[in-house]
Amino acid sequence: MGLQFFKSQIVIRKSYIRGENQIAHTLNIFTGVAMDKTIMHIDMNAFFASVEQQVNPTLRGKPIAVIGSNERTVVTTSSYEARAYGVKTGMTKYEAMRLCPHIILVAGDTSRYTDTCRRLVEIYRQYTPLVEVYSVDEAFLDVTGSIPLFGTVEVIAKNIKKEIRKTLGRLTCSIGIAPNKLLAKLGSDMKKPDGLVIIQQGDIGKLLEHLPVQEVWGIGPRLEMYLATMGIKTCGELGRASIHVLKNRFGVIGERLKLMAQGIDNSPVIPMEHEADAKSVGHSMTLDRDVSDIEMMERHILQLSEMVGRRLRRGGYAGRTVALTLRYPDFATFTRRSTVETCMNSSIDIYLAAREILNTIRLQQPIRLIGVSVCNLTKNTVQLPLFSTDRVKQAATHTMDTINDRYGDFCIMWGALIERYHHKGVISPAWRPAGVKCVNLSTQKDKKANP
Image 1 (tube, rainbow, N blue to C red):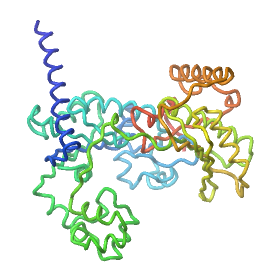
Image 2: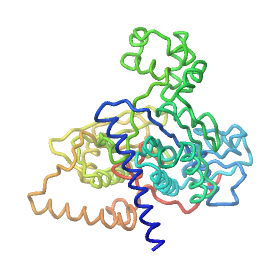
Image 3: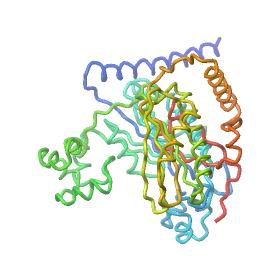
């Protein structure tokens, strides 16, 4: 009786969380009623490195850098022990080794990171259904409707931290809490690692007055440089700048910049199930060595076309435009596109269109990077094939997808891909735990990279 009562209370509690948050979300979006929101931004600390240290205890307390698997790799994340020596994301492994000769280089295991992200999202959803996965190690939570149940937003934040430690071990996060996403993200950056910063409405003006503009989410180095030429270096100065001057200089984003500097951001937290349909689906790979052999390029294009086609079919998408992107060793990059009359999501059709594009290009140098993408997408509008040969082709594709979904990508493949490039995919910023933006990334067995 007691156990049954306890289970019923859990169901009631979860239903209450969903109901309260859904009411707040619905009022804000559909009625235009401006509600005082409480937004949380959770940023996992040194995420890839922390996951590796959790899995391998011998790495704990040591300077490590997570890198890719090929020679042209860069540091994707470094541990705080390595950061003390100046090792930063984006450095080559040789630059990292010069700064920290005893650094341990670890080849990243993307499947571990994506699996950990999914487990983190499960924790977040214990407190609110309004979870926006911003990247593999960041998320926004709208906890406006959850506060009455848990008492205070600080209690929610501390509970999430405790649950992460309990479930995932040594992983820590920095949490920013504020009236909107812009300020919540600013808050999570203010205290690392394992920080908790709450920005109250009354503190916004004082906080932003002397804050450098580059500290605001969305203002990068180039925009910072343009603002500096106008004599604007702080958010206070940007917030007081003439909106007409800003719009004349930056166009439509001028007004947005002024609002950002004043701490104003009305963008909602958008759960994955409410995200807009994809506009394009693509994959690219940086090769271990430059390639000039056309047959080898075509094999890479077939591999990429299969990866793109699989994601399109999984999401119920098809597209009319195929794009081929190529990059030379000097980093000169160009894209060529071809549009057909009918929508496609067959890997072979995508490959044939991309190969045809390649045949029209007179290459000036060997190729460093190859990318294939499909755009002009429609969803759930693929027509049933009329001819028996097309039906057989579709059935074969469906069977291949089913087997690969169960046993892993390229478990069954086209014969030409037996000698395919074993591309260890990196995690795109657009990656999501589900849907067409979810990319199944293969597991790597060898964790330590040789310098």
